[in-house]
Length: 128
Image (cartoon, rainbow, N blue to C red; front, top):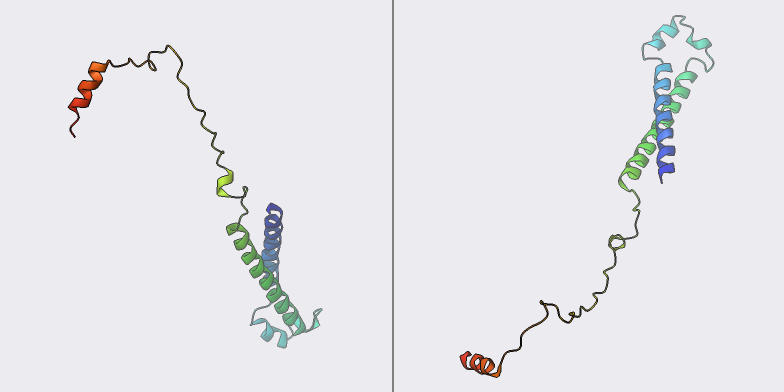
């Protein structure tokens, strides 16, 4: 996708430079009056009105290409592809919990057995 972004960006910049050049080549509205009094525009390559038509159409075409590349760049900037397939792909799988068996002889696991007298007294203390 990075290739498309680069390609559209290059076309966009070249189109912008082309529009600048075409606008600078065009004559203003006041140039037509100067051509009527021998300004030399009638002897140009496209004729007196032909140059205005060609340059206007070329500018309009370049403006349309510029508009399309602007939309393309906006689309490519907002719709970037994801690198992973889903949200759960980046989470590591949980490891199954192994049952822990107490080791014999450790003080944490050794529980002293209660005598029968203590068990009977505890049972009597509980209300029914």
